[in-house]
Image 1 (tube, helix red, strand yellow):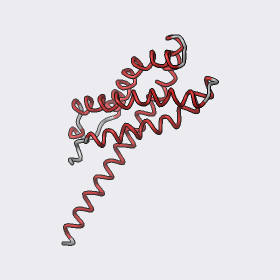
Image 2 (cartoon, rainbow, N blue to C red):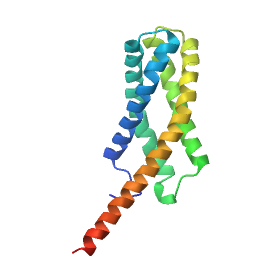
Image 3 (cartoon, helix red, strand yellow):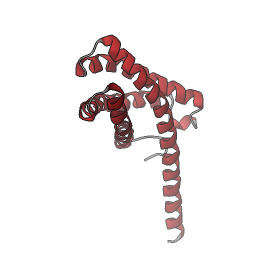
Length: 153
């Protein structure tokens, strides 16, 4: 696999890790803030996360098509565009889902989504920055191991 090209398997890994960490943060906080049970908010978080994982894989494939890693490191501006684009896509999908699942008006779901949007805007940026740095180190370590093995032969 090329360092510059992500496989579908890696994209799924990326999305699942993103969502598991997000659920661990948002479910208890939203339950506390809304006065709802953690089970109810955890269920909502899992449903929204499932939708988000599918969107994440598709969105990142499209994003990587227009800004492949082979163009070099992604600047802060590119990362901000990435985060905002994904979150706006999810807001459009998420508002009616939240309204339905929590039996609230679209306006109240919109207000809740503003809170989620704010959290995820920063979380998405930080998660992808850390992921890319760890990925770069992993591939560099793998390349070093291959070179060392070849020298030892």
